[in-house]
Length: 282
Image 1 (cartoon, rainbow, N blue to C red):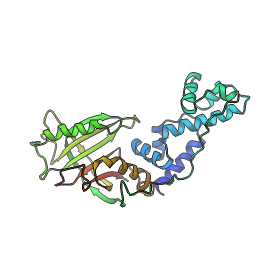
Image 2: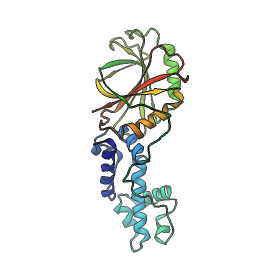
Image 3: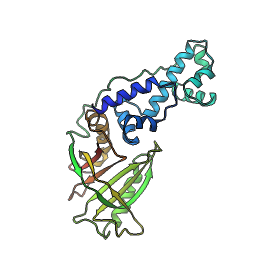
Image 4: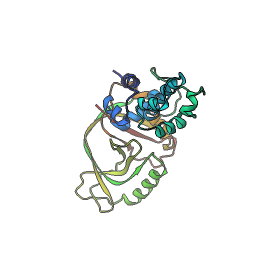
């Protein structure tokens, strides 16, 4: 079964449980993915993030019931898992641009249909152009610096600049030097992740006091090659989760991924640059 098929099975389950309280971490666990992979994959397959999709579908069905008349706003709010009328009204206004009372009195609203079939995949030549390799990667150690972010912003570029000034002389660094960027996330939060930039080392026995060390476990990865300037890395991640992973039956398995950079390339913003994005799978 492909990942896209699993996601649409999950959508069908969500549709059958719209009247219940649905948290994204719980739905991700039921689907069998780590939280961050699930959020990215769901968004790539369905076209919107799971939190947004669930909210809009709940409110659309609630609005349909209210527009039919005969039911109290409070009763409908409770039916769809909202704990109080204020929260329901605030979410209703945010997602549908009107109020429950107005809809009950006949106001129109933008109804969001269930998404039960694939969205169109990108067809341009940007991003990832070839299918990924499957590679068993042994455990390795990184020494570097990290930052907690909500998205990969310019803060990560600044983190790299500061670390590259510090990198020469890191004890037990591999020769020639091998640089990685590791992203990992926590299963209890949807909106932040830890980004570490670092150099590969033989072990973590001599981590300098101003740096951190991280042991990355052995894993089997889908390895994607990004070609061209790092300014286009977002397009590559888009393709990974919109086009390549959905059609694969290899399921993202662990709450991290990492980038590794080729030796001997000096300008990451040149057209001839290339690097690899590694996504652990079952």
